[in-house]
Length: 238
Length: 206
Image (tube, rainbow over all chains, first blue to last red):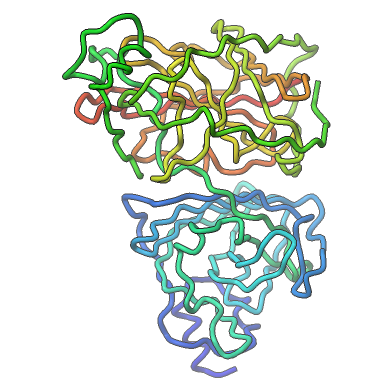
């Protein structure tokens, strides 16, 4: 509980009254920084967080705040180690509380299991509408402020671990009244960027996508079937 | 009728899928599946506040067909997921409508997401008229247990693909909502892709 630690916390992301409860000193000074949204993403994930999913540190189901829910959506660029977060809580009653430097986390743990936090996000705050929201982007390496065995639980974690097995990660937020978690949900992969649902054949710009191609018969399937038209999709990873 | 079944059904998704693109399909799919299905169940009353649920979608039956009476669309659903490059899989066949299997399902948390092409390389495709859906129009999903779920359109948004609102479209919701997505905007012949997506949102109403 040193001055040094306090200073480190200041460099960290957030609002962190919760940080004052940190149990142990963080390790290296390197910690995530708030960054602008990148132009591209490599993956995206969402979680519907609910009170019934909460598991305490002993692995025991410990229901969170009744009636509360949260939508946590993350977009990741694992090449640049950036994660953008869009978090919205309903029915969660602050104050937040956690031994980590914030009380809103991605943890590594399967459904029904406890697990260490890997990333700490700024806690959602009232946006004026009554909902609690938090959004932005962080660039790793990440620290959580929790180091039960002397090593920060964010150390060694990289975002490609989420991409490799999203179901092995969950997200949650902790409050004073529901320290094990007010709401929690497992991550599920969702698509990155827009959806490629048209080929241009009915567009005002005419001719369809093929441009170069194909005088053929009878309909889209046949047309495409000509094989000469194997067009690569644009990769709109945005 | 709201499905309250808790049967866990195997996802037979996948088999029929392949990537396609706004840029045109690489191959023909099998002949379009004739669409039996989707007997719309006229329901009583006006839309009400959408029901909310924290129910795991895997705990309820999957949707099998869609009917959009206002557009004359009736089609069985194929399963779609996330492609290797992180983008959404889309139907190979321009006549098919796909549903995003890792997402929501009728009777559980949302969103249930349907994807269909606006056009093929030759002309209009299954969701060509999606832009004409207006608030109050209904979309009926048939569910694997034979029940139907009726949704009422609440709004339509045109969004640029390069700033696609992933959280707003695919982000989990406590409400039992349905989103229908296709392409719109200008067709970029160079990129062989439309610039925008059209996203119609509908809420469970029966």
